[in-house]
Image (cartoon, rainbow, N blue to C red):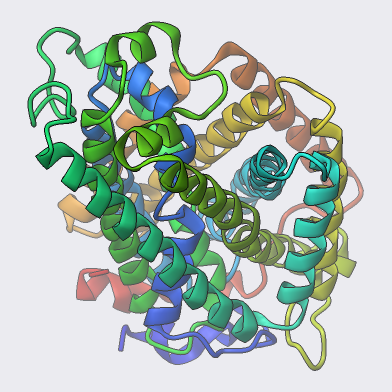
Length: 474
């Protein structure tokens, strides 16, 4: 067990244990994989391929390494503070309560928008397969279904996650089998190492610009941290499941994009013209195995994004809202836990309502998916920057930790990589992201004027020194 954090649970931080502790390491791992979507590259393959000059596998390798540093920082902070709330909790308790509020506010931009983005992408895909049903109606159906599942409890969500994960992995295995057979039959283009290194297009600026797109596939492993108060194993399980989910997903991303990159029918055309319709991967599937494989991969993508992925995204977002409302940093009705289901029911319904309203609105915009993707990326990356700072402040400055590798070097490297991604984000995302941040500052000032300045429960009761003494292994 991991010291006092393991023994005391949330009570040592001044909270009552309200959520249902029923999740094991395997449940957390499956949750993280579903959140990231093992077949996530299906939907954004063309954009990453163009941005990386065809070196799409390299983009995912660099992206995985970058996110590993962030997963390591999550693992350290989740041991010190095993509570729901993710970056809001870690920054608030690791640095200061106002910083935690702003970090939570920024990541809300990611968490609130992610479900709407997923519903929109899935609904557009389903509409392309069944044109008779409009996009908005598909979106309504997805939102209602997922809200109902989340309302009935985290255990039902966990069971459905396992079924969906098996389905996604089966389809991925089918694609890989057909793709490798096509390569063996001589359908490939370029050498076997082209997806990893192409001397004609290679430059570090090209690689890192594509990483900013590929990183979107990795977002979601951090959602595991929001389930800390529903984890029944050691607090180490949170960090370990995040690292394991990220590693497994990264390997799957690299393998599938490697095979797909070698089967692109017109490599030069895809690099020059991009993939405005988002069908590049399905074109590869059609080229490798025929129309049936293209339809199978498109349908699976729609279900994975619109049901499985958005299901866990809604669950994670509701836990973040619950944690902030419990500390009176959001309306307190969001902290209500259903007496039987033991889920933050009001937060679940609010996320469903926001996703529905925002998603239906975005169906009227031609740039809806592009706009939402850039905003989600910006919100997550900015929050991750604060996470890395919180590790250094909490462990090195406050606790005098001498574990320089995990508490200083790794967070610093993760910070540097993510800062590059944020600086090179699209101008529209930067502007809207900073506007959202400015609104958060306004809310923070208003709370202080109303006498509700950020104050976390049990802050004087924190005694994570035992965790530091052990070295904080994840």
